[in-house]
Length: 69
Image (cartoon, rainbow, N blue to C red; front, side, top):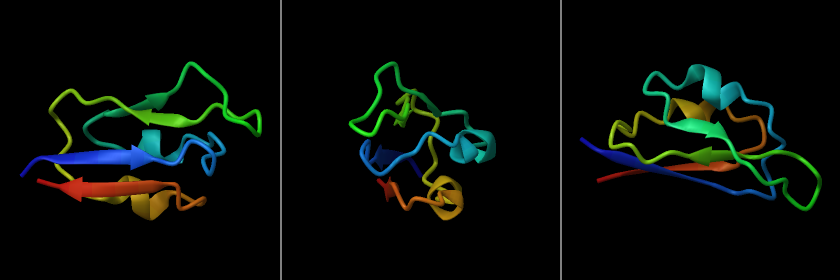
């Protein structure tokens, strides 16, 4: 099963917890800051995401949505 992730750039405070918990390493810090001045997390679509949802579960800002295809 393949998955994809969307992050709400304006909700994300760039804590990086989701990056640490992602087994597939499909999340990374973005190059641009959001309106609040934080560096948000972005999804790197390398085809490895399996839609497990761990990133969304550990996100304290509820800034991640996971989709399964």
